[in-house]
Structure formats: structure tokens, C-alpha cells
Image (cartoon, rainbow, N blue to C red; front, side, top):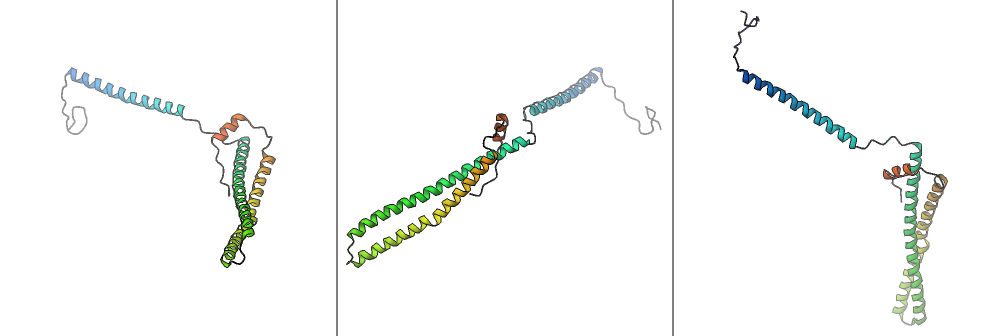
Length: 188
């Protein structure tokens, strides 16, 4: 059996709608489509605005930027070596200062020491043993630590001078590299 539209199958029920109802449905369809279009335009504008505000990714570093980075990292390493050297020197100076004060005090005590008092002699010998241990430290491991720190610092200075001293650098590129500088950790 053919239906009203000339196709096989069940006949469809056709309901007559008033003209005003059809007009309202058309208006809603148009409004729905306009709303979707408006949402799409708003998302497009938001994406465009966000991409306009996002910084452009940095180009790969040029050889000049890489050289500036190396020089800045060498400078940081050299400064760290100077800090380490200063701390080790202060430690050595402090123990040598204590040693000088101890020597002066022991010299004064030696002049007034009663050699017939075994307890005073034993106490003086203990003081001498502590002084000798301090002396060994001030001339042994601390001196070796300071010497190693001096060699490390001088090595950093020589490398910096050979590669970076008196080298002209583009100030704009220098600022860009400094803003994103990340140097490898140094073993100090």
C-alpha cells in the first residue's frame, strides 16, 4: 500500500498547524542557529585574543646566544668558586687566629708554671696537646682545602678570561639569555 507521499509503508498522520505556530517554530530555529553561530564566533575571537597575548616561543638558540650562555654560566661558576675560596680562607684564618691566641696564653702560663705541682704540669701538657692538634689542622687539611679552592678558582678565572673576557656581546641578546639562564650545577 502506498502512503500519501507515494511510498510503501504505513500512512503518516498529517496534522495541520496554524500559521502562527509555524512562524514561531521558524523564529526559534533561526534564533537557535544564530546562537550557535554567535557562540562559534565568540570562541574564535577568544582563541585569537589568547594567541595574540601568548608570547611567541623562543627561536632555537643561535651560536652567539649559546656563547653568551656559556660565558654567563662560567661567570656564575667563577663567582661560586670565589665564595667557596673565601669561606675556606676565613676558616683557616680563624683557626690560625685561635692558634696565635693559644700560643700567647701558653707562653704566659709557662712563665708562671710551678714545675713541682704534678697536677699543674699535667694540665699544661693537655693544653699543649690541644694546641698541637690545632696546629696540625691549621697546617694540614685546612691548608690543603684552601689550596684546592685556589686552584679551582684560578682554573675558572683562566677559562673565563680565555673564552669570554673583552668579548663584545649584543646587549639585547645578553638580556634575553640572562632572563632564561639555567646553568648546570657545579661540584663545589
